[in-house]
Image 1: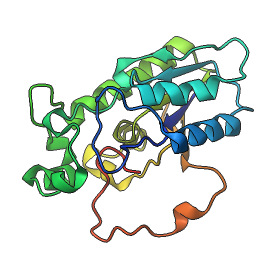
Image 2 (image 1 turned 90 degrees about the vertical axis):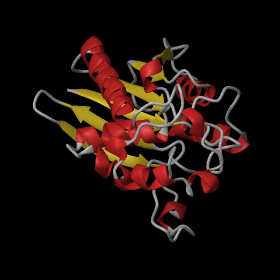
Image 3 (image 1 turned 30 degrees about the horizontal axis):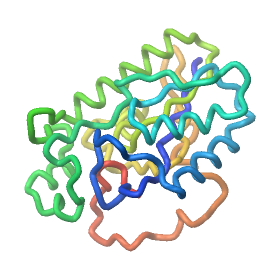
Image 4 (image 1 turned 45 degrees about the horizontal axis):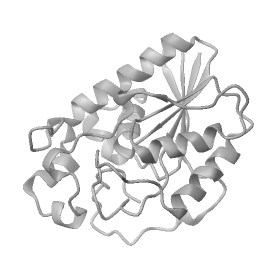
Length: 223
């Protein structure tokens, strides 16, 4: 069985208010660097065969924090299939404005039907397919005893979790993946096992209900 640690990137200055997508030049901020370093310390005792990363800067920085101090692993492998959803014309816009768009309700209630507007807009179904395919490919490449980490993005990790649980993509908005959180999935010949989800360590702040009364899921993962 192959064990995959899915690690969401740490916070950036734009995480939360802006749907950053594939915007260039969005590094971790001070909070995000601290989160990534903490995740690296938390996983220091886990023997990793490899760390794979989305090509976006915030994920590469997070992946590097997981590698710091490990012998034999210097840089993450880059796999575009773990890159963020291509949000097309929504990229770079404020989430509060996007929430007024008619497509927002479809994203919330019927995400499998969503293709984001614009020439480079991607469907959520396509994004899930490429990410799950990437996991399966790396599982086969690394072998049944491997433990490896993947640094990616909120919606991508949510879609991988949904697949592992056998959930239709329309249910993936019920899943929460916080910045720098760790989700663990163990793949066997018969089925995947969700071992841990959205693990941010021992802090209990995440148990306090947020000031978000509308029930909408955070597109792009949220902060």
